[in-house]
Length: 245
Figure 1: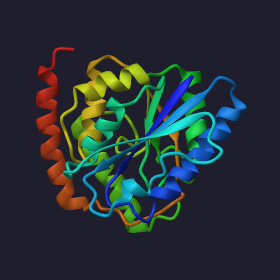
Figure 2: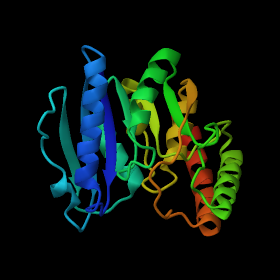
Figure 3: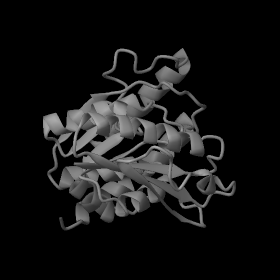
Figure 4: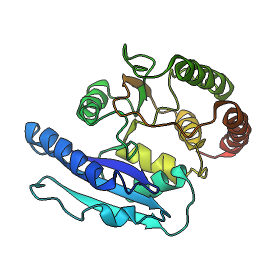
């Protein structure tokens, strides 16, 4: 079995190298426990101005079960575009994406890989809502805002997932590449487009509990971005309905 980890990069000079080393160490540890497993880490640079892609090593000493790949564009297009590019370059039997700050840590990767294999679902979505410590470290206002934000968007999107915007998701490799080949959304609403297309394809879903272990200030502005997201959701729903899948 081969798994792919996709990491979007945008001005991540402070974290890129350490993230590559932490992910490599975690992936090697997982592979050592499961004979015949290999991996690839794909860093997708989305037009960064700080040279963070150059900070990602081409190889790391001691890595024997996998490789590091780098893809990118000189123009900033958005997180959705960066992940779409990485998924398109993937070759794994399982494909996952997570943020460069490793907000959910690295232990969750092995746990989720085991979970998707055991459950047999096509898409496994990380969820803070079903983890007893999922929102640990959040201020009360940020926790409330996050839950309200997710509830509003989930209702309008028509999902029954408890944390559709979680930045940690896994897919069967062939499903990931099929889904992302049909995606067009470059910005933050790309997660909804991915899930809507997967739903239209008739793919099966599961959720995996996650918690934030590395906090950094959110770039989401709850009220203004919620209205922008709703407009995007209506646009995406209209487009996905017309897709012939």
